Image 1: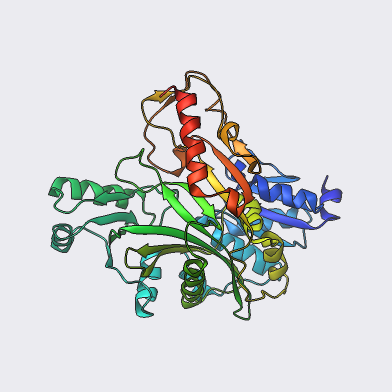
Image 2 (image 1 turned 120 degrees about the vertical axis):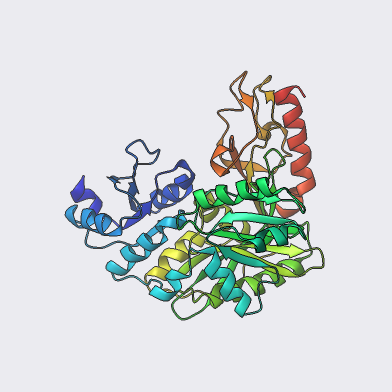
Length: 414
């Protein structure tokens, strides 16, 4: 097998989660060989070569690649924030374009991002980092609704929304929860902004050219406890005027450049306050599995992952934004009311209008008669998904939500 893999273009993917299936399929269509790196021997994706190594251990990964005769790759990729440094190190080792050390330092800690954005007049809300709880925390919670979150973490773990005037005991518990889930044991406490959240998918090259490829309207579950867990990312939605997305793209690129990002993907979460003001939440120097392929490509009409790989090999990013086109896509997560169960096995696609189709899915729990649904506490507890697409006018949020209501009523009998 080794002679075969080294005879082809090689892409290294850090993380074997099934959510990277779209990227693996892309590589197969291009006749690339895929190396999967994951700490678990039981990971879903194995590729043409599987390396059972912690994705954070770049030196061990590079050593294993070389031991397997791999002296050239087309690019490395990961959906995992904590693997961004490894992706960068691998690309740099193989002579590909990569981020500089300073930008890489800005790519993970939320406190660093917010400080730099604040210095560049991009933040527009209270945000502070704490190593231990103080009177300042109690004082702010007495005045406004706040959100507590880990400084460095993943999968929406450790987040708690705290209402104005919450008891000291509940504040202490929220702080401890965030600190426990934070890799550096620091906690970010921010003003909880009422408004709409969006995501912005970007790609920049070594010369500072940045393009926005897709913007999603983000929706959150109500079936959780004091947390914000996304259950719909609606790319190229017609819910807002095109001018809103153009403004988000403009601010998004400023947020990307302010952190010194180059030769990198950029996945930005940004809030629009009720008065229309935009305030960035956090950014990753990566994108995520099905978002990278196919969701962004479906919404933009562009080869997003292919352009990323080309950029690593010296290709240019146009600087043009690919938003407000004719097609839409959605990362739809099944969001089932707690204390319900499957009565009639079925899926969302049974209720979607003609012209809207699913490209990938995980429906196993929705098709298991008697399966019980409860509240979810982080991203990994979501019960299934659909990657759906169609022309923009066919995929209004109202149309999707109506199909979802019909599905839930039939599936659960309630």
